[in-house]
Length: 207
Image (cartoon, rainbow, N blue to C red; front, top):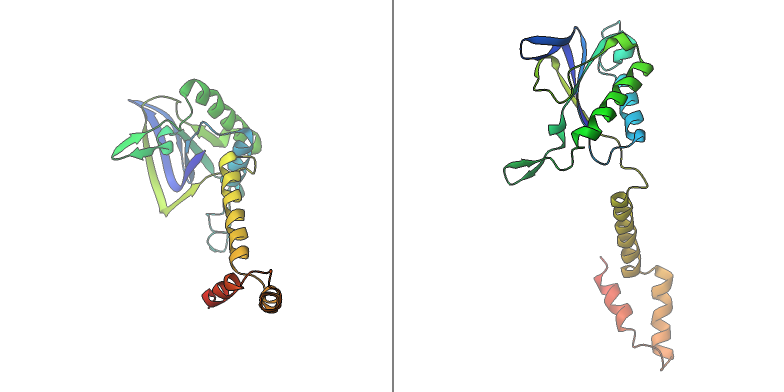
């Protein structure tokens, strides 16, 4: 899941000549749903979007208040093109969730957001429609948001495994001081031991 959050003074969405929704000051959320998204991602994104501190407080201090703190509105627009992967210059959308699955997923996202905030303050466009979105960005302030990789994600596990392997290789290449001290007398006194060349070479390589 990927979201682009814009702080706005006003925003609206229309289909043709029909205006579907409009808000005053608040945030506009463009949301792209991935084939890998889960309920955990929904929970994380809703919590972050509603609590993102991008508004000033009563004294004018910036980055102090969230949309909920200020009792502002939220306009959500489904935006599958956020899942774009470029192949050369051509956009590829195979990571976007297919529409027959994405629509109920998106509707559930809206429902959960309305439960977490005031339902009448959550506005949206029309899923799958060709929309015209008007956004008057305030600042401009634009925040990109994605959920963190889950610990159970195979890609994430592979990354952790590679990091661990690199750490182990580093420890192997750089023996401890005590290990180097032991290796020198052993190579001189024990004929059956190695010549000590490996230890000498590793020592020379160290800065």
